[in-house]
Image (cartoon, one colour):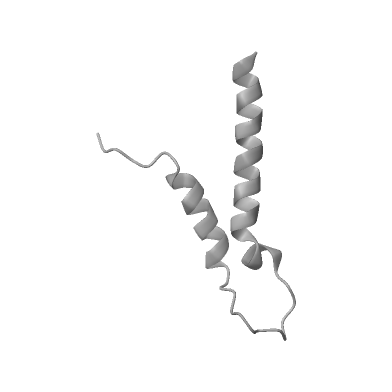
Amino acid sequence: MSSRNPLHWIARWADWFEERGVYVPGEESRAVDPVRDFGWLMTAWVAGVAIFILLFALAV
């Protein structure tokens, strides 16, 4: 039985966002792509909401 990092799927999901493009500082000529530019923020927000819901579900 291999021991895996319990947060591995979160990092893998954030990497999925980043694979769609890499932000290059100073590249001002392109439009903002939310998935590319804010992938980690979206991942952290969804994970935070999930933890918040789980905490309330376990408290009942």
